[in-house]
Length: 413
Image 1 (cartoon, rainbow, N blue to C red):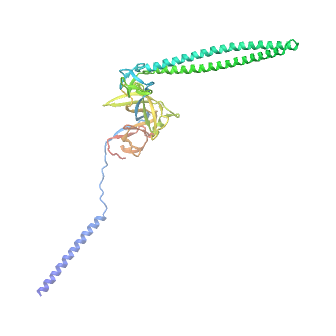
Image 2 (image 1 turned 90 degrees about the horizontal axis):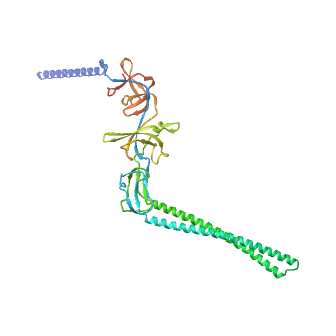
Image 3 (image 1 turned 45 degrees about the horizontal axis):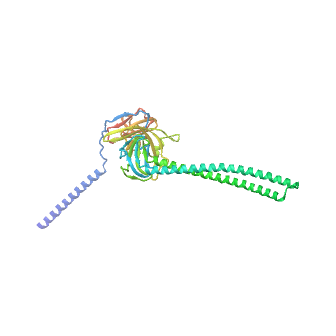
């Protein structure tokens, strides 16, 4: 009996414990389900307030500046070549790399002995040709005299023949006399023809002599130029580059010995895109816009002024845009070959405002102060980028205050 009672008590306690566990699990589940289905708690939000720097948008007339890079070149560059070959007889001390030469300065002299001998021979040939021409002219005059004498002789023979025929008609003359007169007249006519042939030969001789004189004169002129070519003179003042001769060296005809560069006559060549080129055109022609050339030398900026003069005729193989040239005036310190920065002043644009580049967002809007001192977005037309600034057109924002900075990532409101 005691065993049965204890068994029943154990079963009762176990059932009660199980019931309590089920009740506790149901309570927890109900609480979780109620929590998940409940509305989220709403907390009052504090509006963020920040101080920003503002600037008034003031439209004005501005001249945008186009910044490109270019290379300086010399407008006057001459390749110095030797017209004749030979051994250098003398060489100026200025004929060195970078040597400064003056206009008219003798740079070098080639041994003129061979050229002078050639000139002497050419002049002798010219004298022979002129003598031949004079001889031909004398022969021509003599042939004229011979022709005149032959014609006079022929006239006499014709007169004698006519007289013999008259005598023969009156029965006084004889047949042998008439025949002799006819033969004499025929011989006189033949002499006239021979004299005329001599004149033609003399005229041909004169023409040949004139050709020989002209040919000899050309040879003399060439020889004189060869003598002059033994001395090379600087046609303008400048500096020498690519010097390839030394004292006593031998040069050949048309050999380049140096390049003469005028460092004072400079121009800058720079390339712009097609869009940038379109801004520099007015009525279909390239404008003569002013430019400023800058060269950074260890923190020191060398600056020179210039003006656009022309553009290249072709784009160039494998290139894009346009190649433009600008003449540079008064550029001390600059040298051909310098890689420089070119600032081009574009035509003026009316009713534009200059803003910091950070003020314009990627969507083409700026933040301006609206009602209740809140930031609002306003669209603007981006025209140019000028370094850290931009030029925009916003007619309806004239006089408005826009955000100039202070907020790292500002948003409307």
